[in-house]
Length: 204
Length: 204
DNA sequence: TCAATTTTTGAATTTGTGTTCACTTTTTTG
DNA sequence: CAAAAAAGTGAACACAAATTCAAAAATTGA
Image 1 (cartoon, each protein chain N blue to C red):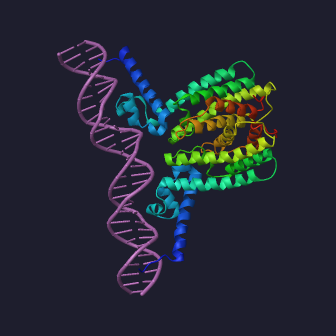
Image 2 (cartoon, rainbow over the protein chains, first blue to last red):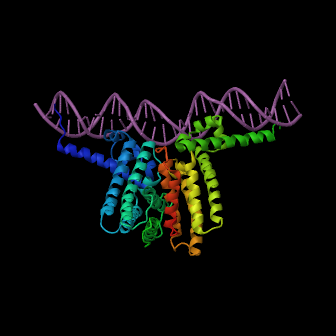
Image 3 (cartoon, rainbow over the protein chains, first blue to last red):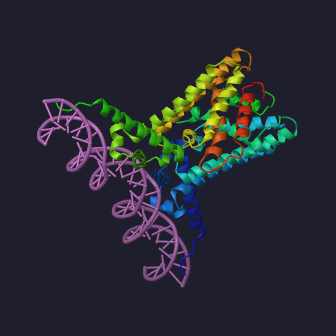
């Protein structure tokens, strides 16, 4: 045995992996999954196409990981809000606001997460992730109903509706067609109000 | 000149076109745009692949037409409801119920309309069509606010949210993953209630 | 029936991309 | 430095699916 990975090498490998992920994220954020061909990812990451396959078994799995990372980060933030203090209405309000603001902030993955075409495997993952988002809201809803803050309702349906509501309201503004959102804060407020009223919370 | 289209031929041509559209609609309804390859469409329509191109300049335009037809039919129904009599709340309620029921009824285009991956041209059209749906609800909202039935709100955002809400709530149930919806009418009622509360209408 | 013309066919071509792999370069250790 | 192993390359390959087009079949009017 005359070769063993040195720590330095180890680091470089991890670095490559990260660069590939970063490049993919960037391309997807800018032009959707469609723009993130393996060759383009490789070029942006500064590696050969073959390299991609040393780190990821397939393009689909690379995409799923990118999507998963993005969703994971988002979920973490939302979950923290959901588990925080304050009334259920406040938390719902904060959660929606937080998500929408971040989505509007700039080139990001939101559009891809919402409607962007991809292959079946990635699509399946996307739908699952949307469900995950719903679960966060569902938790808030259950809590709110228990406290008597919200009227009794079908929490599964409501959670899905909330996710659908704010994502759809974002598609126009952040989609590839529209290039400018006139008044972001107004949109944020509108969506928040809608969701709050929808679950029967105090209209803000 | 020894050839002129006879009325019979004229009819056959129109027939072919219709068969192609129908076959496409059927395939899309069952398996999404992904399943509707040109060859598959041709086979189902009982024509050669070349025929497709005699009637449609490209697959994308064929898809856009199919989507447009489906949306057009849907919009017609919704518009009728929107322009009908009754309170704005009632009309909103009826419109949502009507759409959701039809989407749940069986193999249909709803899923493709909502999230199914396709190429850029079709995707653009889909987003436009979603906007069209929003406009119908926007009209009801404006009316409702004028009558003092709904509180003042950002009608554009609310309309988009409504469309997003009920479509998202449908993705799970009618998507390719889930195969059964436990209780359709319950879902219909849940979505309706959500939307009604969301716009500030009387909770049902 | 025949020739002109159009419609229809489907195999071949084109195209766009994901994936592979024989080869090169780099790294590691004795 | 040399040998062994791994990392890295990118042109070639594979594949699926849209599109084309030369040839075949069908239609029309005389």
